[in-house]
Length: 129
Image 1 (cartoon, rainbow, N blue to C red):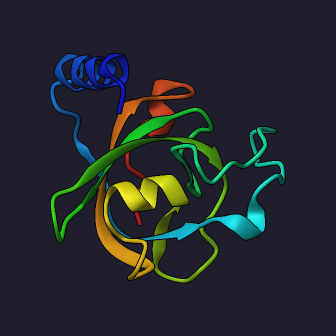
Image 2: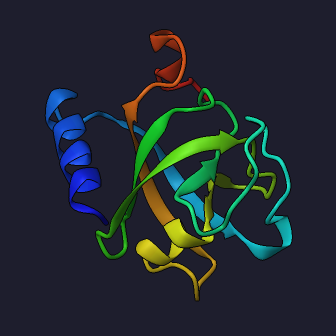
Image 3: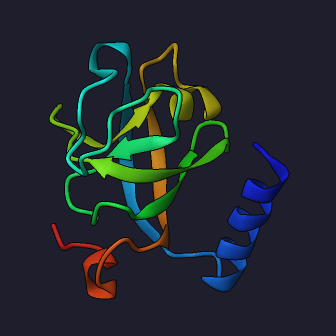
């Protein structure tokens, strides 16, 4: 992670008071087979970027994803919709999955914290199940 990106993340966490946990559940990752295809935001999917797919968070939202097995963290930008696999709450790009050490397992238990909402503030509140 570059120095400036680290500083940005640290400031975002401090400004938001550490952020509340938005969601807990299983994460998966997707990669090469989707490379070059457009995402729901219109961006082209690049597995080497830190991006993710989420069902309800506004596109452009930045979240901090923590692997609860090992404590590793990565921030990602939501730019796609999904995951479509049952019992998954987020699909990470390959780079993001590697950062939290879940490439080999394919899935991992995670916590998601909203760092910066991509839409109206009320849309980033936890949804009731």
